[in-house]
Image 1 (cartoon, rainbow, N blue to C red):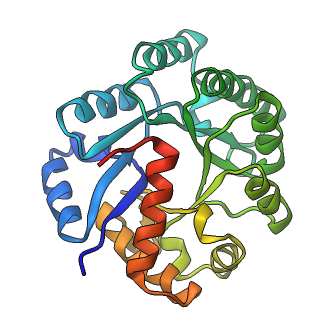
Image 2: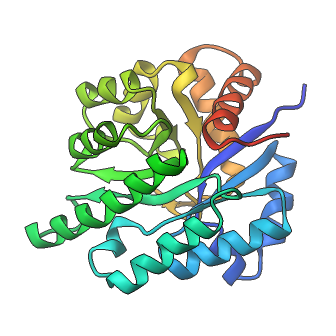
Image 3: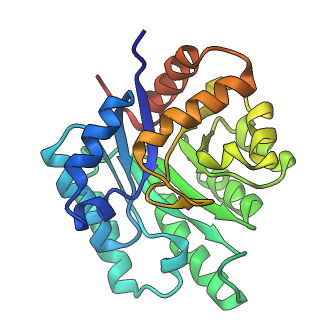
Length: 255
């Protein structure tokens, strides 16, 4: 039985820059990946993702600015990204990668700037009912509070490693958790999979991030699906069926 998987978080612009994007897509298709959700780190990467997705239905676009970048990005540049969202709101699958990171970025002033920028994107996501593709480390509670404040309907917490208590807040708010190759070595991520119902799990590569010596690609979503199937003690076909249905609902993907 063939399976259909969706990669819900990929820095596809890196493949465009390296001119290997078509090669990556073909390899993904061989492994059952039928859609890739591309995320932006800044204006330029967001623009590349958006343009490439107009030429290839396989790529699903999200536009945003990563919290590692947001604290040092000018308001002029932030406005350009917000304008990119507004101008393409009917075509976008979501806003991302956005969020708050208090572990890898240090300094109260930088955190405050991250929060100001994040709030702009959260408000826009709520206004246009777009899914939010979220990065948060060390600030999970603040993120969930912000989403609840603005009544955000659709969000996914990419590579969630926060507390199990906040995990329950995320799930009770109707949001999703995205699982990647870290599930093959991290006991915490395995625990998160165990505590998250299947109807709230989606899969991702976060490629081309390197996971303990393995340079991830969208094809690795199949490996992630197999590991989640092992943890949940059900078939990989069932994992594919449920997580793909979740991803289609989250990002309004049709096929």
